[in-house]
Image (cartoon, rainbow, N blue to C red):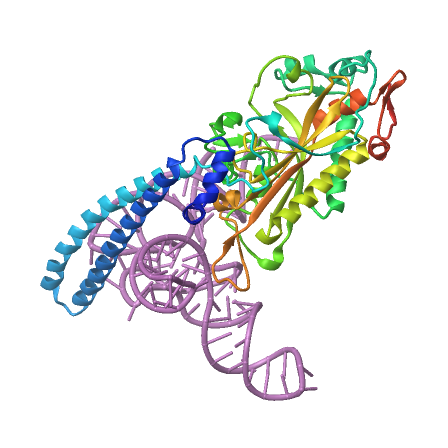
Length: 425
RNA sequence: GGAGAUUUGGCAGAGCGGUUGAAUGCACUAGUCUUGAAAACUAGCAUGGGUUAAUAGCCCAUCGGGGGUUCGAAUCCCUCAAUCUCCGCCA
């Protein structure tokens, strides 16, 4: 959620951003400003009312002390009048605030100047790729769901039996490979200075609201009504909410957190080849990296996070490309996002494995996450960033597919210390 | 699941219907003293909102969250949550 003050002061930038995001209608901004004006007007009226009530209450207190009961009783009349007025003002103020909030929730984050124009994912800019030539593994190469069956390492049918579609069962070396990847990612994150957290996999409503899953993405989360708790769709939710309602000191920066969690997503998506096997799941594992940054340094931090993700992919030997998301594909809360895709040689397509974003103050505003600097008396909003480093299923998919040989599936050297084997056969 | 106690500023801890945004101590910041440090002393030290050029003043709100009683609530009532103790159950 953008602060109203930002919309007031940077209205032109917000309009430009909305244009990049292919919005036609900008009237919401004027609605917000006029609702905010109304909010101020009501707030002023209410404050004046309360100030008078407080003064009268004090007088009555004095009068009672002096034994002037009759005078006190007459004062009560005005006080009761004010009280009725207060009720009305309170109601109006509350409803205006709700309308304002509702309007603010409709405005996406202000896109960074470097975000290109574009309608859909086809307009994303290829920012960098590695290596330049794509791997060729021959026409008889199998997609990962067939490899999974051939080597008996992932059982999709068993997942259906136990739970339902989208909940695969990893088995034997498949399970070990998952664990090895998680461990590898966490060890790498630690050496890049991220503090590891082990967090709850269910969160309360305040947390879901804090990172913006509520109210707009409510349908994507599993919900347990009896306890009013949500299954996390990403570790970003519990990790970032650790810092909800916190005021940091300037020298607390940078705050760098990481954690591995399963992620639960209700989104069924479309059916067909694009969601086969591991391509799209209801439950998957991910290592997330989060940074809380001084606004002055947040874009350097974003570069650092991208470099970290790149180094993981290089160590795994997976061909990848980095996309700068265009306005049409940029997430609602992000100011700038780089997507990382690995090339699956058997499926002959790119698969998204990571998304690294700077949210600037958009999340921090909702979280009430601020910092105190030496030269400013008022706390300022921080910048938050996060990224996957990495999500497992599609890494697993490209790893299995690209490394298949007639002898078996080769495990990248960097992973071997974590798997304890060099080949799945 | 049952019974009881508790929840006050960064921490500790007063206050239990009327200048209490809140005593006091610690911590923190600045200053005095000192060659420097420590000690001592002095001063400052919450957040949000309104007003404003102002991050100066002034006003409003906030004592776990929400609601209520009252002219007036940190103080009384209801409700939810958390913490502690005892019992039960249990990895």
